[in-house]
Image 1: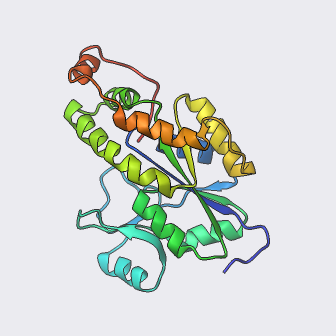
Image 2: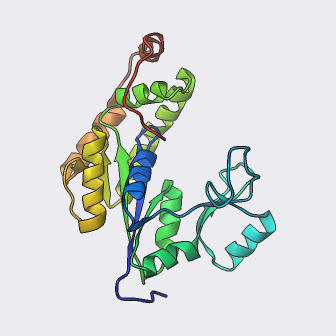
Length: 236
C-alpha cells in the first residue's frame, strides 16, 4: 500500500538484442539520485566475479518458492535454466513510496507480470527499444564480440518477436544516437514528455514493417568480422 502522496512511477524498458536498453538504464540511474534500479533475485550460485547484493540477491530455491507463495515477487521465471530469477516486491515499493521513480529492464513476459502484480496504488509505464535498422543490430552484435552465428540466430528470433511484442507496450523508441536517446528517456521519466526518437502513431507500424522486411546479405556479417567493424559501445 502506498504510504505518501508523492509516489514514484515504474518505468519498464524492454528491447530486442543489441538495442542498447541496458546502457540506457545504467547511464540514467548513475546520473540521477531519484532513479532506482532494483537488484534481481536468483537461485543460481554466484559466478566468481559477482558480489551478493550488488549483481544479484542469491537465495535458495526453497526461499525463492516461499517468496512466490507469499506474493513477495513482482515477476519471476526460470527461463528453462533450472534456476529462478525474479524481482523482489519490497525494494520496489519502498523506493516508490519514497517518491523515487523505478527503472527496470524486463523481458516482455516480465513486463506483463509486473503490470499484473504491482497493484492499483502504483503507476507503471512501458517502452520497447528498437534499432534504426537490422544492419545496425548486426554491427552492434559483432562490435561487442558476439560470434556471427549467434548474431544471426538472435536477430532472426528478434524479427519474429517484434511484431507480437511491440503492440503490448505504451511507447516505442528507436535508439540510434545514444545521447539523443538518453535525453528523450530522461524527459519521459521526469516529465512524461514524448519526443523523437520516440515513435508516434503510424510511425510505429511503419518502422516495425521495415525491420521485419529487411534482408541482410549472407556475407554481411563475415565482412563486418573481417573488417573488425567498430561502433560506439552498446551493452545488451
